[in-house]
Length: 171
Image (cartoon, rainbow, N blue to C red; front, top):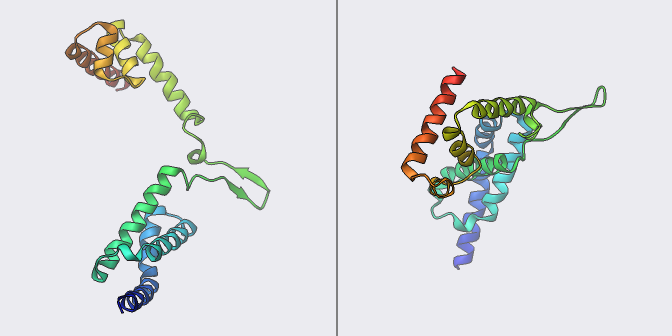
């Protein structure tokens, strides 16, 4: 008997989901700013909602649940680079690559910025430059202190001062 109720609830949920698609689409359109991506996002949200219907505790909260699924799916797509694709122009059969589709390491502006930053760091006194370089390489304050033989408080101070000097150099 319980399965029948669950099956009935799923049918009611499916009907409500179909009615909610337009609202979900407009929200997805705000997030993606692209009609096709928004449609894909709504479709993926609908699939996930139907697949995981058993996790929905209360049908009264279904819209909030759907919006949460949509938002989280969008965030996951951004993280995975799902929206970074190469656009082809069918008129002249050329591949157009926008700056957003280039990986960060290939973007000419980023390359220039990195070179400029490295040059500014190189111009800093060694007492500031070395801890900052290690920090930017991913080392923790404690590791930098151990590697340089300088107290951790001094390392934190030098890194902070180096950042301040760089900010002044850019302004």
